[in-house]
Length: 185
Image 1 (cartoon, rainbow, N blue to C red):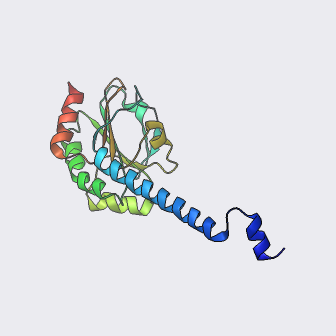
Image 2 (image 1 turned 90 degrees about the horizontal axis):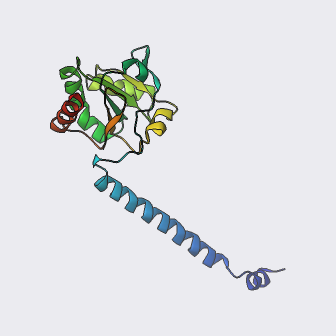
Image 3 (image 1 turned 60 degrees about the vertical axis):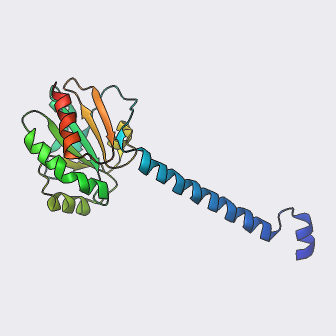
């Protein structure tokens, strides 16, 4: 069968098929860009969570040892998910470090690094002088269990293990202190 006969039998000639694929790709990219713009504009702030209590986990720490959420039951906890390549994470790193020192005797602060390399994460911690416990969630299991949708994202856990708040986006010092004070009431 020659090309003309094949084109007559095919309802989607090659040019039409290429156009359809191109339109589908353009539509997909358009929706992706639109969605990212909506996420960027719409996800900074308090966010609902389906979790009533903080899922238990074990996290190997960069400085050695392991952080066990169950081991700090009875104390409020701030869990901050971050990545070294995340510019908003860089913006909030100093605020979280300051708060970790200020509230050290009252609140446990923990950093959970996601979607990152060990080397980049360690360089980030050195760059921002981070001294509170941090570990890498290499498998992403902790992030999935918490329903993390992007970085930075923070979870405020009451001393009874229930979740008080989920915050998407960077935390400034005033808001961070306000939420930590709320945990202590």
